[in-house]
Image (cartoon, rainbow, N blue to C red; front, side):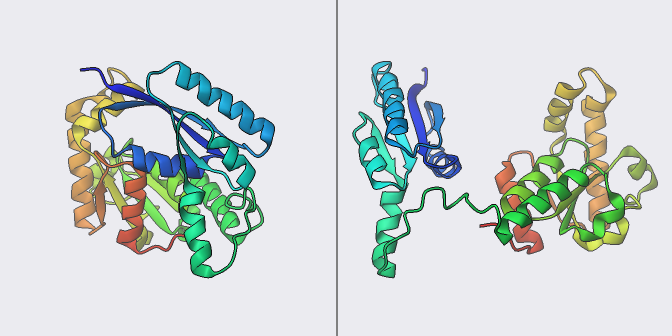
Length: 275
């Protein structure tokens, strides 16, 4: 049976990241529906909201089902205009700002772009520094500077270390480095010399050999590197090495990057620096 389809708009007066993030969290609860997703950022004038309304109307005309609109618009007039759309409009600000205003007994600033206008804030600088650190310490680079890291991810090639480090840097302001465990390390039965002095900062990522083989096959088709028997050997050897050195580890096979990063922060008790 084919999936039902719905068009979903994420409308914001800023980048749209917040609307998209909150909307995705809700949409994942509904299986069996194929969502066509449209992000409409920087809707902060009457002209822009009119253009957005035309796009929603076109989507409505092309489908038997009305579109879904998630919005994080601050300006009352712009929000009121968007609510005229022939769509299910879910207004995150209306749902949360009004109760908070009542609780605090003050009116919110209603400042457009406040959530992302932090270019000079301490939290923003933490984020930029952490991203630069992750890029400079990816896949064994910058090993002489690992003492500055908050956490060092180790694991076989293609187990998810790089995207996890970048996510932790961008979302949490964590300085995360990653270092590969290779067949040379397995033959010696020892950790790479660069990370051995930082044992307390190490965290392992592992993955099922079958999934690892699939990922590597896309990168290097037909290679020994991607063969299932080689992947089984590397994963088993890496997990043995982690157990020997009592390195906490997490399987990445069925987890999203968001889940992996959050579980690592909980496991090593790191405080996020970005909110």
